[in-house]
Image (cartoon, rainbow, N blue to C red; front, top):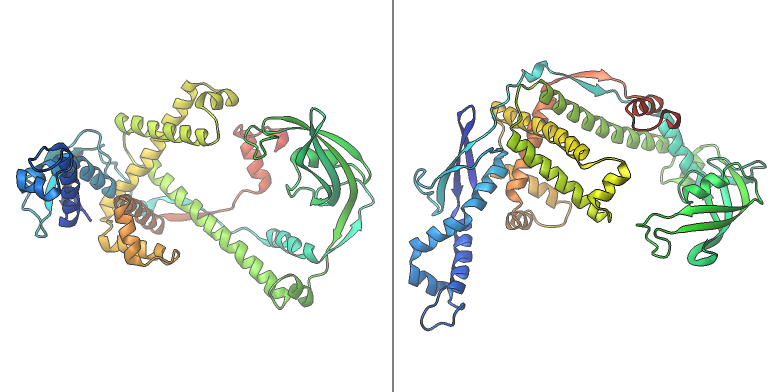
Length: 456
């Protein structure tokens, strides 16, 4: 595995000293010998079938190594850049005479790269960062308890029009142009209004209706619907509402807790639910705090985002969006048309996102340098071994897979960023704030133009 050290030469120049170990060099030489064997004409061998040992004998090791370096140098350089998190803004100056060769028989080279001016960071222990308080979770506990107890509840005739939360029993069939569609019909289908088991159009039509109602509901299916006979079609559902029932929940007792769960008491069941909810919320809060800390660092940093990096990141975001849309069966043009936007709007948005991404990334890399944070080979092996525990693969096999797939340097770069964020969140000043209520979140979304205020 390659070893790379970084030395800052001045505000905009770094020197990367890279050691390619003997194993990596040998593998690269083997590839070169195979490739050259297809190109050479050597007496006694068929064209394109010259074996590696004959190539080595004909050309000599020095020539083969020179060709290997020529072909693989860019890959080694890119791997060094990825593993260190360096973001060059221009082509590197490569020096193959950088010091003595490694003792293990590999090679060493250096790359002097131009980078963005290092951001000037604030003292991170002075940064005040919002950290949400753990909210009162009783309403969430009650909701989960209600869902748990429904299995032991009894159904009773509602004696009124259907409302959200009611159990309904329906018969339905689907037609297109008057023809019944196979696989889109059911008799005695039971669902709870609001749980999403019925199409939204059907739930809307059923709400407010009493048992015995017969409905015809138009539905327009999306083009990517999993049933080909429905995809992109306008259909009609013919539905009969057989029953509207409410669920009478039993009182939570120890006996009921035993019936609906593996817990022996009501207290144990409720405690497990509360612990699970609190654990998930604490994870969410930790994620929010980490995001807030990175955003605060990037906002406080003094820097200028190099245009070359902005444009490169903008293109990465564009290609990523394009790939996502292709997977959904859409083109960029269709996406923009549906959103009522044009290409200029899209690229302006992507430029803003690219600048924000770079500010966060460059700030974190500067913090890693200032704090002396690095990722060693042992750190990498420990991380791979930890993940291997959940896959049934031995740590040695997992490490071989990571190295063989070329993911080692990318993983090293990701670990560097994560460790730097760990250091950041452990140092900044958390400021306790309350999470917005559902109503406040809806109002904020409406004010931002995400949803109409009437729908909030």
